Length: 140
Image (tube, rainbow, N blue to C red; front, side, top):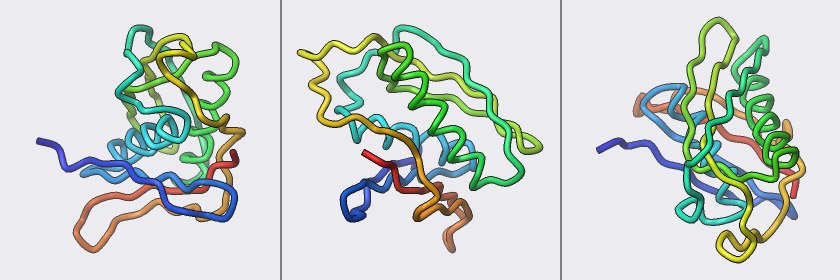
C-alpha cells in the first residue's frame, strides 16, 4: 500500500494544499488530489476522461504552481473535476495526465471555486523521513 497522501492546512481565508509521497511525482499527484478536495470529495469524481497536461518551470516550486494552475484552468475551461493524476518530471518539465468527468452539481456538490495556486506557503522538498512534500496556498 502506498504511503502517499494529501492534506489541507489552514491559511486565513484561503486553503493550503499539501501532497506527500515517496517520489516528487507522487507528491505532485497528491497535491492535485488535495486541490480537488478543496472543491469536492475526490471519491465522488469518476476518472472517465483523460486530459494531458504539460508544464515547464526553472525550479520545483514554480513547477508545482504551474501544475496546479494548469489543473485549475482545465477544470474551469472544460467544466470538469479530476480525481486521478499521473505525473512524470524530468529536467524542469512536467508531463501529466488528469482523469475526471464533467461537473455534476448534484453528485459532486462543489463547495467553492479555486481561483488559482499562489506562491504563499510554497514549498517542495524532502522531509527528514525521506518522503517528498509539495505544498502551497490556493486562492478560493
